[in-house]
Amino acid sequence: MPLSAELEMFSDTDRSLMSQALAQGKHALPGCLPNPPVGCVIARNGAVIVSGYTQPPGQHHAEAMALSQLDTTLDGLTAYVTLEPCSFAGRTPSCALALISAGVARVHVAMLDPDPRNAGAGIEMLRQAGIEVTVGLLSDQAQQQLTPYLCKVP
Ligand SMILES: [Zn+2]
Image 1: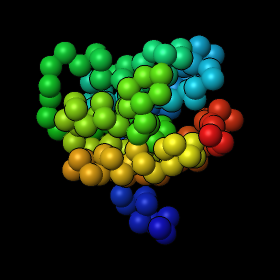
Image 2: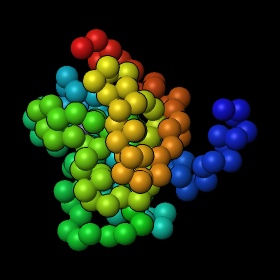
Image 3: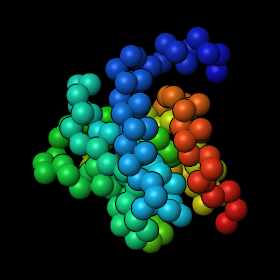
Image 4: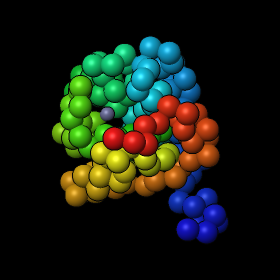
């Protein structure tokens, strides 16, 4: 996609919320290792409702941590996640499923997860469920922050 189209796709609010998600991700280190330090912000009408970051292995991923703080079901939620939500259940349940169950309307993902168990499958699950998904918001910053921690081999 040409850069100009990408710039038009996202608002300043979107950029600000994704940069808050990136800031959340920084809180994950070093407790989250060997999992990547992902951050997640869930917003409604441009305002942050809850946020989260990767917890130590076996505990909540960023998305699950954020969703666990929602005490009621809200419509019109938008999630900003620095890495593609996981499609597979590993030590913890799938975050893509958790976002679907919570009825999130829109998900902005900064970068795809190169892990071959995911690699676009998380995005596909969200889209199949009727969620509007974009990929690439602040992707340079996300890649800088996450690439050293991502698993590329099964
Ligand atoms: Zn996950």
